[in-house]
Image 1 (cartoon, rainbow, N blue to C red):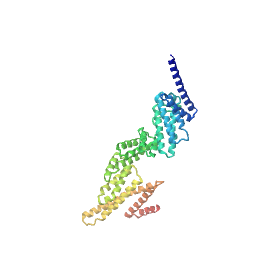
Image 2: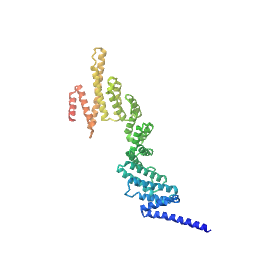
Image 3: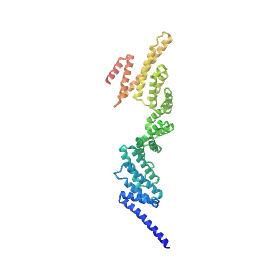
Image 4: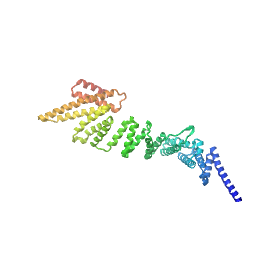
Length: 422
């Protein structure tokens, strides 16, 4: 009987000692005496039996979070201590899923760690252009956010997180990219895309992934992101189509590339960029060294057809100038072909006459397009350098055409406008 009483007394003394030890930790935490608090909690949890109890881990999180706020610490050191604080709180929730100590304080420690990793350390590191450290802290903030959300925890004033913190995810992706961690940036941009975020400030996520998949030659991923981009950001349709053109035509040589354009135009009949870019490619091919010894006529017939489709969608100075310039140059080419025919045979004379008629037609067809360039320039309050060049060249084309037509009045009028551009 005496032995049993002695054993019971021993247990009582041990429990009191443990309780006093945790009370000591609480005391230092409440007094915000960070160093003693950290030392006390480390000693407390060093005892194996204490480490099996939840409360000590909660107060470790508390003590370490306080310690991490020492202004003398580097960002990296503060982040490491905050990480230990978060790990301790995770352990606390594991040992006691009801987590009364955290709930009683509106889970303030976890929310404080979220702010500490993101708004404090992450932003501070980023402004110092320490992008890798910024990325690691933003990423840790995401981890804290996701833990809070997974536990359905409520903060002060009944504040609750949404399933995804879009701003934090965006910052994390940007920091990863700036830190040259492209694969990590993809992971976080993809979180935004998978959440179907459609606010204009997040369009970069879709553009980044589209470029990434294009570079990786991942056609499935590329098509998926392009289609989603078109759906969620329809105002950026020209950008998505331009990327699709690049992806479809990259590495494809002429004339095979023209088949790619035909397929895309059938898919997007109301798009301006497609036929305009197609026309530019045709123009360059027609006047390339390769075509000097080849038959360019099929492409010369094709170009005006394609350009008309572009102009029907959007009558721009660039498209109208390209048409006027091509038709004018083509008329000169045809006239030169006619001049080369010297034979007296009726068939030669017939061919020459047909060429001269076609040359005149091409020149006449160029007039309305050149005039459109001039009229659009007049309506442009702030013309760009290229628009000024196209305007002047359109005036030159019109002057030369009326010189050929022997219309001195119109030729002089355009000559005057040309001089005014100098």
